[in-house]
Amino acid sequence: LAKTTQPISMDSYEGQEVNITCSHNNIATNDYITWYQQFPSQGPRFIIQGYKTKVTNDVASLFIPADRKSSTLSLPRVSLSDTAVYYCLVGSNAGNNRKLIWGLGTSLAVNP
Amino acid sequence: DAGITQSPRHKVTETGTPVTLRCHQTENHRYMYWYRQDPGHGLRLIHYSYGVKDTDKGEVSDGYSVSRSKTEDFLLTLESATSSQTSVYFCATTTGGGNEQYFGPGTRLTVT
View 1: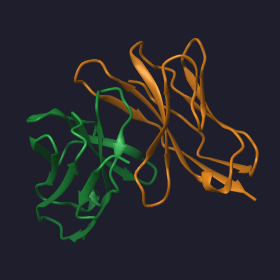
View 2: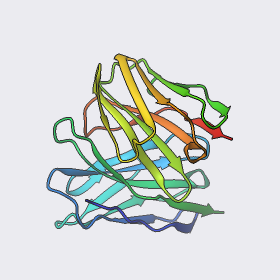
View 3: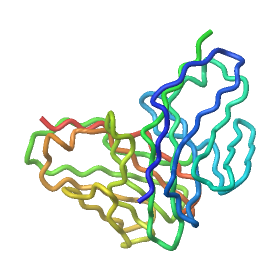
View 4: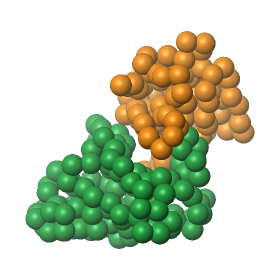
């Protein structure tokens, strides 16, 4: 069964680029990778999703190497409001069988 | 944000009593999920539904049951609450199996 591993915490400063890496060595062919952000007392919120190579949207980029055993969430020029917990999710959308393997989250602290 | 509400938002109950948590969505999403979130464990899937009256177990389903009699409502029932079920419970929905999950605000349940 796939397992996702990510750093427990990270520190950064305003204006810096932050890269959070998730390891998922046993990822299956049909699995996709998704990242979520969570603020205290709120539900997680979708950031970005990918299957391979690179995906970019308005808030982040997701880098996935060819072997797909890891993925890196990149947050450009972070601000204080990016202080949150970031979760990596490996999931399968094969039929109705839901396999959803969440990482334990990376607590990002952005300092002034 | 997707229209997902959870009720109650907070509940304190005694060991051995039945508890039902409700998730309501206005987005007509096909898939609905119940998670629990605990320190050190991240998000863990309890049960999910892929349609009306179609449900399946997640990784931590023991002690929980679910029902989905209509598209918009997904109920989570603890038949006889235990202290180990003290947690924050999140409901989520998606349009398709592998798509972005939209989370509700959570229910904080304390079993004394």
